[in-house]
Image (tube, rainbow over all chains, first blue to last red; front, side, top):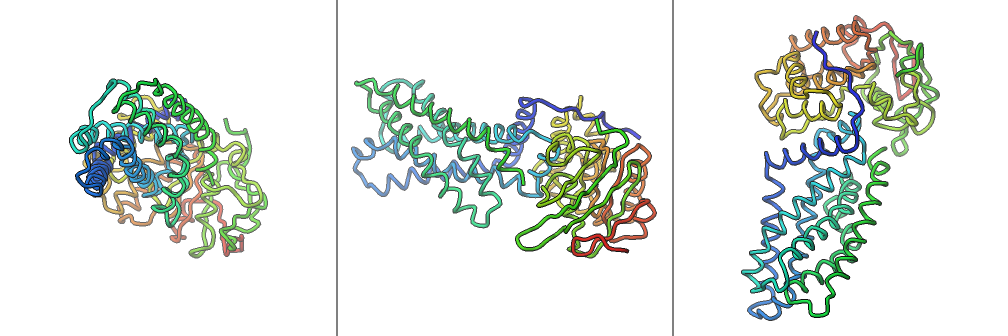
Length: 234
Length: 218
């Protein structure tokens, strides 16, 4: 009979890449998550526009905040869905028992969510420009960096809390309840930094907000990496 | 490497509690290496919980589980490399094809040429023609066959089979008996939980009957 060779332990990076490839493949085959979060984020931007009426000055002034709220709300869908595919048929157990390093599961989920949210942010930005009448006052590279750091900051704690809430009965309520208070510093930094990019930065404050966002990332990616194995084991 | 001459499985006063209910209660048992075990008992008697404890999917509330001489909690990753579980849940991603499901596992196991290894196993379980079909469209029997291929990918030293004949047609049951016999011939210790006692007895040398999580005379 033909049997595969005996398994050998794979490293953290190899396992992370294998799991990330799997998650991206599932996303590519279904596109369920990306479609859902794009429409949800667009609807959120539109709702703010309708709620505030024709006051373009107000929309322009607060565009950074509305942009990040749209990404934050959509992130809840994305994070929840990333663990829904694992709970179907107990796939997370299958990965754990393979065995895959639990830290690789955290990294693959968090990086996958970051990629998806960054793509979302890039896709909805032109819509925000059209709806709110804003333009980039500094540089697009600054905006790209803020988007990446902001999405990293939502994804690390979001992945930890999505794993915790994935087995709860009220998981759809639990995830935002846990996540929203925690990411306030990141949301504030990303919003302020985005506003500076859109309205100009005469006092050179952008670096401070990016520093705060980087510090937040350092803490929560570190905490997630260390704690995730304890979270997903019995 | 597993400890030489260690029992394949040793349970030392093992208990597992869900809320206020003891699914396994103070179970002590040793399965010698090279012997295979039939687990019997009514629904809810603790068979699945026991298999999940041995597979390290669960940790015991009290007591110690040793698999091939290793502690199943302290040395969890090493135990997981040697043990494979065929569970009620298939561990299959619905939106991936049969081939992709097996390839993901092969990559996690560090198997060289993962797609070739996956294809070979699909041939072995009779799913070659559906290798590029998403699992979502599979029948229960086909899922079971694919789950078996997943188990075989690990070439385990200890195979834990929870109701392996469930959802299989007569040909599938015959094939499964052949796979279990091949596993045993290849040196794999098999622990089998089934309600089909005659079939189980023909494949296993030892029997453990559970009732309310405790070992009782069959």
